[in-house]
Length: 190
Image 1 (tube, one colour):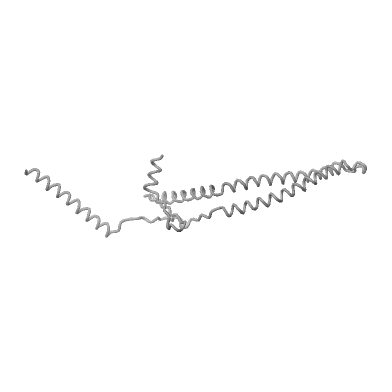
Image 2: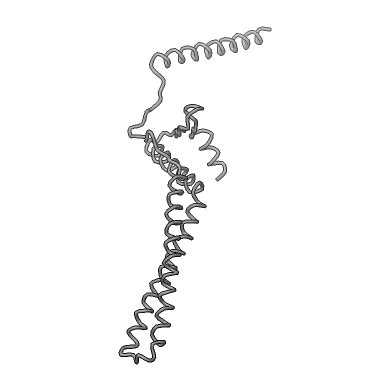
């Protein structure tokens, strides 16, 4: 697996900054199969972007999850206290006026609990919204500027360069062959 990764990294993958002052990164994949090159490039860029955003915002996301859980818990307790007060009133219909303590004390406790949880809930909601705003500020903006489009650019040697380089290569091979044959004939005549 290490050999495959190093072969891809060394021969087929080019990652470079366009300009040292800008934070634009250029990713190129070289392959004979243009569909593979396009898909590999897109998948690689998406994976790296997702990982970067996740690592940059992980702590804030964890804080939001904790605050959301606490907010939901307090909201549930507050709703339970409100329901409890209503149930107490419903459970004591036609109460004897001399026994008001059976209704008033539990009702006031439930109302006090509901009011306390309401204050806590408002503070938690405020903190949750501030944490969400902070997460939005911390989340880096990553944008793909130029997505590969098929058909991809194929890099090839032009006709003039090909003829010129072929001529030089042919000349060098001819000189090498003539030199070797001259040395071989000379060594036979000695």
